[in-house]
Amino acid sequence: MTLVRNLALAGLVAVGLAGPAGAAGNLTTGATTIKIDLTPDKKFSTTAIEMETGKAYNLDITQRGTTEMQFHAPDLFGNSYIFQIVIEGKEIKPTGLRFLEFDEGGTIRVHLVPIRIGAFKYWVQGQEATMTGTVTVK
Image (cartoon, rainbow, N blue to C red; front, side, top):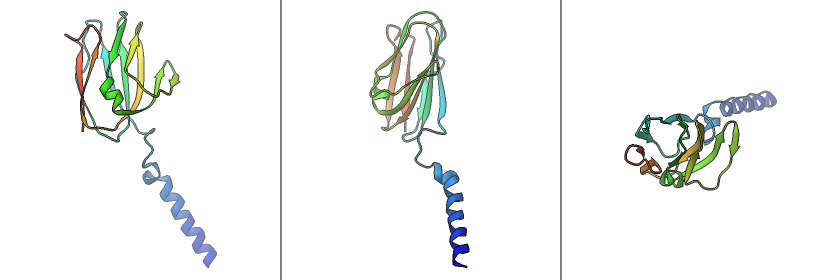
């Protein structure tokens, strides 16, 4: 009977670990995707974004035109854990990030987890009059 009870207990523990509790703390899965488009008319598709500390996000930044642009978000990047950056299926594991440069159209995905609350500006260098936004982290 003890063997049956121990096996049943082990099974319950294994089932519990396979559920949502087993995923707790894994910040690389279940990320929310947020998209920012850099449009050809030199505007952002969104200028106000909300995030929460400790939650994972995929920040998809897409350059829709052909003009070279530098997307800056140094305070957001500096106050986030950046798991990886993906460009055309290629992964980069950075130790720090200040800005992303687009020489042509395309998408860069930044997997990040904000670690500090605050309002963090983002902008395109040289286009600050029309291309600025704020990420508010709660």
